[in-house]
Length: 341
Image (cartoon, rainbow, N blue to C red; front, side, top):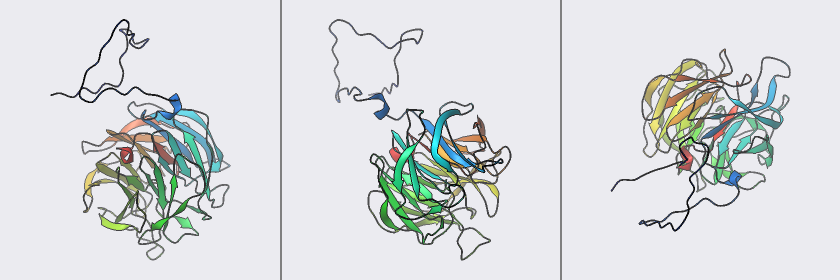
């Protein structure tokens, strides 16, 4: 028996949906479930949000938010503004809401957390705080209900915190990474069950970044467990995930255009994926659907560049378009990433 997966049915010119009249019957082994509730809570549109970042002009941090439709290519669109100008943020999302653990305000570390509703374009609102910790450049990841982040710089000891995305409030303790280190806001990712932290720069080895790949089970609490190693140690990675594969893109210390990947359900070392071309020095952030990963922002001109990869293949990244502002050290997340299945 064949499976038919249909996203939308319209009339011939695409101007309206189907109209059903008269007596209509439906039969099947599993039934049909129609969407209910307000449109803004249905989610799953494949929208990526790019949040804040560093700009070349004063003030050096931005409160801009852009969004893209990941299945297409083209330049980003304005989404609104963050609650404060910020940079070094870390993003995580459910199918309806994106949450950003802010890194630095103007210009000091901050413990603030903002959130957006993906289907809107009205900017960000206050969510809570990072449990009293002011830090930046944490690795973040999420499943359908819980968002987590770990590591970073500032007053941090490698701790992992978590929130329930559908609520608001301060974060709670989850556990610890094996080593406190600067991660970079994009250096985390998730499958539907596991959350990952990739690489990072430890104060113990301040000139050479770590190859560490660690993971946790998102719905439990506890310390991170070793998964394997990156092909090249680095910090400030932009990671993208679907439900099976994580691709870790570029990075710094040393600056590299390497992309490597893992199969998240297993354990083991990363394997070469290809090269990123417009963003060779890292400090970007990633957002994903089941088929495509998109990387925005970088420490190389043009700093507003966006690249993408296709998960099912290996090979070099391809140009997607540009953000509306220089988005180096931005945060990013989507409503259809690997942690959502």
